Length: 112
Image 1: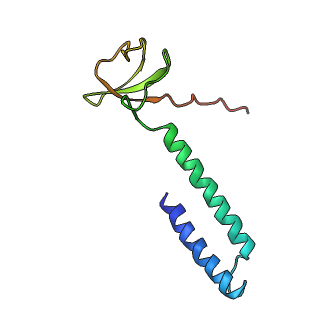
Image 2: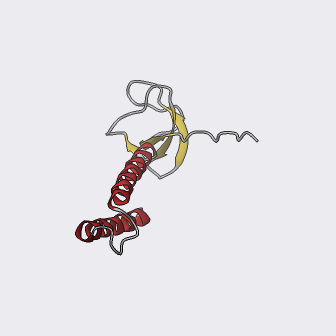
Image 3: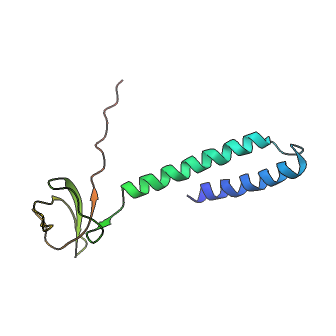
C-alpha cells in the first residue's frame, strides 16, 4: 500500500508539472499521467476488494449462510474451521465464536 501511495504522489507531481509546462522536462506525457492515474485507481479498488473478501466479520455484522464452511475465531483467539447449523447462529464444532471469514480458494493446479 505504501508503494502505491508514493506512486500516487509522484503521479500528482508529474501531472501538475505536465499541466504547467507541457511535456518539457517530464518523461511522461499528460496522457500517460492520466492513464497511470486510472491504473492506480483500478489497483486501489482491487486491493479494497481483496481486503474485504479476507477480513474477519463480526457476528454482530452478519452470519455466514447455513452449512457454509468458514474459519471462525473464538473468544480465546483460537482459529478453527467450522460451519453454522441453525437459525440461532449455533456452530457445529466451536463455542463462543466472535468472528468468521470465508475460506480462501484452494490452490489451482498448474498445467505444465
